[in-house]
Image (cartoon, rainbow, N blue to C red; front, side, top):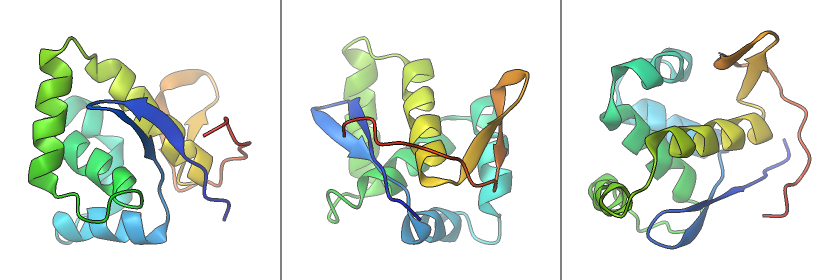
Amino acid sequence: MTRLSVAVTVDRERHLRYDWNAIAEIEAHFGDVSFETLYADVRGVGLNKLRVLVWGGLRWEDPTLTISKTGEILSQYLDDGGDLEILFEKVTDALEAAGFAEKEKGDGDRPEVGSRAEATPSGS
């Protein structure tokens, strides 16, 4: 699997990247809930799942990053005028680049999870 990252500027420019370890850590945080279930409803359920998805995607670049610190970073991001929709799009782009999600044809808002996405590096 090609491991591609997607640049996201929160407290500074960081890079979201998902691999098997990141997905396993995300799943482990929520217990027996599968990644597909977590990802399928993250937009409608809340910030905790988004925070954990961001944490899982950033840990490759900063292994000491905690979920709590990720929450602080995201709080500051929002305080500084950051947009949750843009953040979710970046997470989706990174998951697609890694092959863990693919947008369904005809529905740009509901990604299909678990399908291998074809991706090319976006420069980051």
